[in-house]
Length: 112
Length: 116
Image 1 (cartoon, each protein chain N blue to C red):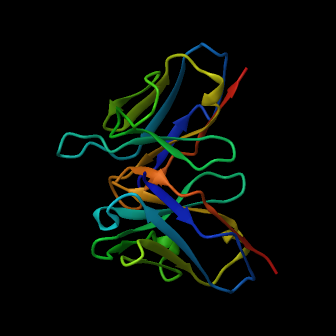
Image 2: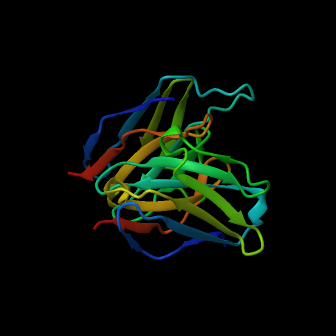
């Protein structure tokens, strides 16, 4: 199984400041079609997870442009250019390339 | 618009079975798969498997092989997950999600409590 390792696991951020989360995988997520099969999800308190970024760097519909995804192969990053109060929650990376799909442990973002 | 509406909370005794449902609205049901994910209290997300709504092909992680069965009813646009031999550590919120293969729409979740 592909193991997903996120860091940090806890991320206190001052509003208006940037934030960055890393996700490293034990196998490459680069498909022969040229796409990296790596997604980012946000689970706000008490809510279902929502898709933020798919195929490594594509924002899902309705996701603000302060969120961006980058990386390739086994090393990926989610960046928030300016954190807002509504960004509080747990962020997960996930790979849908190989079954079983696997998730990172989650990174809890809190406002300082 | 796309919506996945899941069945209500369940309370079961250890050893029992449960069948959860997930009804899809707002898109052609057979175009995409459905994945099930669970979240134990205070824990992260765990993939339980998925089903193609087109041909019924399923994929389950080894951990749940023999205990889980996923199915669909294309006449009602509903996906089901049957979990047998329930244990206390199956207590969790169970989510269904549309699989494109990113999980772009999620249901509201069903709380399953396993307790004697």
